[in-house]
Image 1 (tube, rainbow, N blue to C red):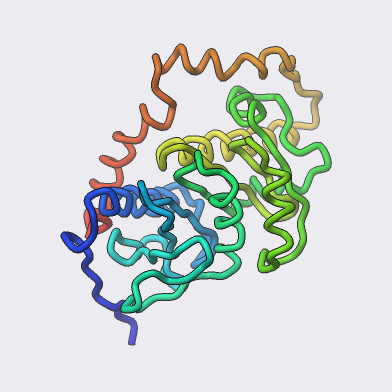
Image 2 (cartoon, rainbow, N blue to C red; image 1 turned 180 degrees about the vertical axis):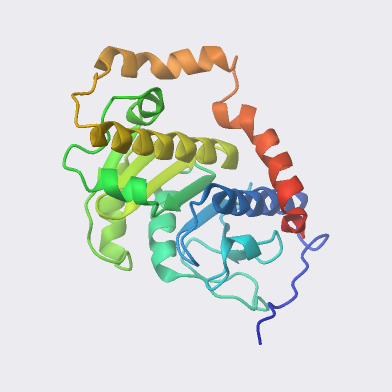
Length: 256
């Protein structure tokens, strides 16, 4: 009664799809390692290269149960592509992720969390404040979306797309956070920076003292500075191989 269906898609999908499945499953395990998961809720989605199909977690599985093979393949309209797939997915998660993937073809991956820190900062009228280096990266590409209840309405997709625009970070008011990137590694690194920024902001505010705010001109130039540090690569590209090795050591079953 507690066993999951045994699914093995290795050698049954394209090499591009399998690589995307491997990296997305690893990202789910990283959520567990960082404490960003929320029982069976929140989502990470990724677009399969050269395809209009997306991969997302099966609804009802914890993130430490996610493998490359049990990710669910869907189209942009929310239809499960494989008729033999034994899993379903969360429609609320699909509303948010499909909205982003429809509007941002430059984004391969979308991450969504409900961590205490992101919900807390998203619930402040001022939102994220420029008081840490981590905040600089997020504020250089930040957007906000007002809370409308559970994300199941088609009309909300249009408003979310409008609010996101060309940004890579979003605080969902009273709800959580969303990041996206050209690669799974980029989207992960964006979320790492955003969560650290929110954690630091809460710690600074708890001290009851006036913080030092970073000048907007520095925020405006932070992306160019980061590009120099990574010499043509993104922060996610640079860090991602190490994160994959970390997952391999902790959860060798993720790649099944």
